[in-house]
Structures are given as structure tokens and as C-alpha cells.
Image (tube, rainbow, N blue to C red; front, side, top):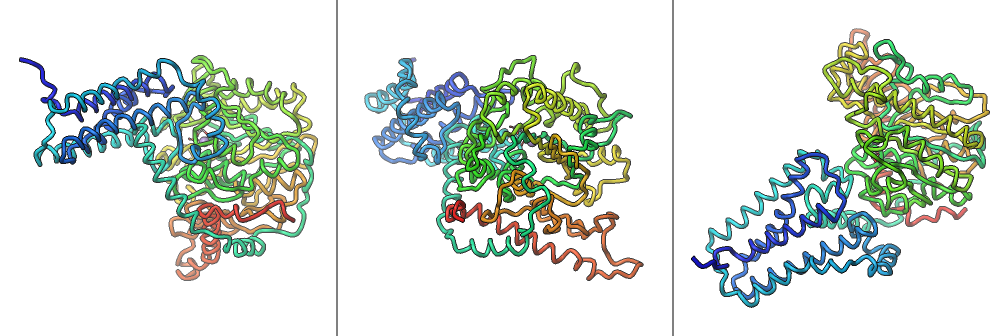
Length: 633
Ligand code: GP9
Ligand code: MN
């Protein structure tokens, strides 16, 4: 029997050809990391799903010529989009985002180099377009183009089924993929380039519209709130203590305070961090809380650099990475500091590349700056010890004074570690996550100790201050049972859960001699004013929601991003007001406290917390800092 094209609708042929081509680009042209068979599978299906979705629209056109036209132009435009991303990728190892496309400097960079980025074989990407073009013009009569109602409904239903299937697998593979918005590579890998562009467009328009309706009117209200509730007129006792010194900030992945000065199987978990607590040059804050949400590490960075709150949903680094800020690197730039971040991960993770550039980091040593091999990496990538080791040469080469941030990686869920790096045994409980947490924490502790020694050897130690902070929790509430076993408690109450959100915070000032353990409540929101004041920088004109931790005159509460809080006297969570010291809920009981006074106790702070979070959100959503000139005195 003679083969006739007419048996297969043109939109199906176009789907197969275009899907195949897109797959080849994904798989062989982009360096997308695939960790398991499921990821391979999702990557394989999503180009076909996206192609089907769009080509199948053609069945709704009545006229044959319209159908053909739709298919050929779709193939052409789709190819141009893939090709543009490919060229962009060759230069940036990243996918196009709308803001980036319209950002003058990037586009200019690209246009000069675009010709050098195009390869002769790129012509091959257009072969299927030519073929479809030929079929749709010269052979159009051989294709079925009159679709029955059933055929149309089938095409539509199929589109949805395929899309839903793809999204389902993606969600399974990467929970909260959409709401957390953490990495373009993950998005493209899981939902494909086209759906990613649509997602980017929706996100972008949402952000833009909120921004459009904002004006500067709210700024006086915000300043007022800050003057009345946050800012202190006194200079803290440590103002200027580190003037002109280098700053080395270590963001310690997933380290929580409960491991500090604690043991597992009779062994110390963090000998180095424990020894720092007693060190005369170190301040340790034992009641310091992380305040992050879905943006995890990036949220902690946002808090630290801006003293603004991250968002309750999504990662602010992603959703508002283009806003105007008055972040620490920007301020320090004015004081002749060179700033750099060291992190051995993909630069677009958490949209760091864009955010760092926006807040004026001078340089980002990302994964490209490190030699990463199978031997020297585990879990999420380069092992912490290797990472510090390889970073030192860069640190020695940059201008002083510098402001630098080091982000460790080994102690990341699921806490994998090679046998040879395990110096303590895992815990024994029903949670492997908690069990394995201890040896990786110890590994990071050793890595930080080694880094201190390397800094000394490199002659960088004396002129620097070193800050170490846990970025967020490592052990989630899913492991409460194992956690209660470890902490020797009957259960983890909501109060305990809040207390587990404490992360270590150290300020180490070589030669200072007055270090101590501080018990006052504190949080990541406080880092920026504390640090700037230590460097002798006034913050009178700045807008921030934290306090200098060396002030006594402080606002008296730490707001968690979900509205829970810790105040000097209470901890409020799950609608319960707890006494902070005893951990007992304030409720009507035999001792005569009535219900009303129990809830009333937390009420005034609850209102302040709500107010403060919403003012901070207004700044971010409205991009309000674009209306302020922070340099003006
Ligand atoms: C990734 C690292 C870990 O670059 O910061 O991210 P997390 O999952 O902790 O936010
Ligand atoms: Mn982290």
C-alpha cells in the first residue's frame, strides 16, 4: 500500500519533529544535570508535550490554509525561541528571562558577541521548519484537515492530559516547583522551555503590576514606624570596633543551634564551634532565630543583606530580584569595600547571579571558579573542605578591605557524606535524615576550623572579622518523632518547634578580648545594622527592621515569617501564647489566669509583628526604594 501523509495529521508530524529537535537541544546543547532516570524521563517527554499543546491548536481552524499557516509559523517561531535560548545559553549558561532581555546592559553585551556565538551547524536546527514549510505548502492537500468534533475534543483533551501528566511528574520530582521558583534550570528541566517562558511571563506581569500601582506615599509611614519602634539614637558600645576591617561572612548550610555544645553517641558534634563559644574574641548569640520561608538560603541572604523580610510565598530573590535595594554590599561600596560571594553552585540557582549584580556585589565566584570532580564532591556538590581550600587563592587576590560571603553546601538535605569523611557515627532513630545530619554537621564544623587556619596562614585573619551564621533549619517537623527521641522529650510541642528554629550566630573579632555568650533574643533581620555599626557606618537614613545586637535599646521581639514570634517574655505560635522561659502555655488554669489575660499577653506584639511584616512586604511588592535617594543626608 502506498504511504500517504494524509493518514497522519500534519500537526502530529510537526509535534514529533519539533519535539525531537527540542529534546536534542535540551539533552545535548544545554548542560542540564540529570540525577536519575525519572529526570531523564521528564526531560524526554516535556518537549513533546509542549509541542503537542501548541500544534494541536491548529485543529480549531476551519480553513485548511489557515491550519497550514498556523503550523508552519508555529514551527518557525518555536524554533527561533529555542535557538535564541541556545545562543543566550552559550554566553550565560542560563535561560532567557524577560527582565534580563529588557535589561539594557545584558542585551548590549549579547548583541556584540552574538555572531561569535552562532555556529555553522546551527542551520540544522531549521531543517524541520523547512520540511514542515514544504509539506504545508506543497503537499497540503494530502493531509486530513477536516476534523470532526470528536477529533477536536480528542486533541484538546490529549493536550490537557499530557500537560497534567508532565506537571504531576515534575511536582513529584521537585515538590513546590512553582511556588518556590528556585532555579531556571529546574524549571526548564521539568516543564520545558516554553512552559517556563509562560511561567516567567506570568510572574513578571504580576510583579510589574503591583509595582505600577505603588507610589512613594507610604515611605513617611514606614520611616515613622522605624523611628518609633526600631531605631535607637544611642551608639552601641561596639560602634566602629571593626572599622576598615575585612568581613568574612560564613553562611553555614542547615546548621541549627541544637547541635552546639551537644553530643551524639557520647561524642561532641561541633568541637570547633563549641570552642569558639568560649573564645574571648567571640560573641555567640544563643537565642538567634532564622526568619526564612520558601526561599531557604536565599531568604537568609536577603534578610542579612537588607534587613527586610523575605516573602511568605516564593523566593524574593526570584520574584523581586530586579527591585531597588540599599543592601550591605551597595553601602559598603560607598566606603571603598570590594565585595564578593563564594559559592560552588550553579550561579542561577535562586537567581543569585541577577540579585548579586543588582545589589552591587563586585564578583561572584560560582561553580565555574572551582574544580569540581566526582572525587571531591558529595550530595549537592563540592565538599566544604575542598571548597574553602580552593577559595583561599581568590580571597588572597582581591582588594582589601573586602566584604565576602561564603556559602557552604555539604550539610544540605539529604546529608550525604563519604565514609572517609565521617568522623562521628550517625544517630540511630527512625529518621535517616536526622541520623545522617550529625556526621555532616561535624564535617562542616571541621571545614570551618580548617578555614580559620587557612586564613591565618594566608595572613588574612588579623585584619578581618568573621561572622558565622546558620542559614535555616536542616531538620523539618517531619522528623519530630526522631527529634523528640534525640532531645529526650515526650513530644515536640509547637513551642519546641519554634525553639528549634534557632541557628548559631557568631561574631569573631580577632584580638578583641571581650567576647561573651549573649542570651537576648535576636534574628537574621538584625545582622545588617549590627555589622554596619561595627564597621563604623551610620545608618540614620537607611530603612531596616532589625536592631544592632550590641544595643540595649531594642524592639523586643523576633518575627518569624509566618507571623509567629519570640518576644522577651513570650513565644507565640499555633495560636498559643507561651511563657518564653518555662515553655508553658498561658491559659486558664488552676493558678487563676483567665483565658482573656492569656491571649492578651501576646496581643500587643502580635499586632506589631503583623504591622512590621506588612510594611516590609509593601516595600518589596511596590519596589518602594526606587523613590528614595539613600545617599542624601
Ligand atoms: C544552593 C544552596 C542550598 O545553592 O544555597 O540551597 P537551599 O536549598 O538550602 O536553599
Ligand atoms: Mn540552605
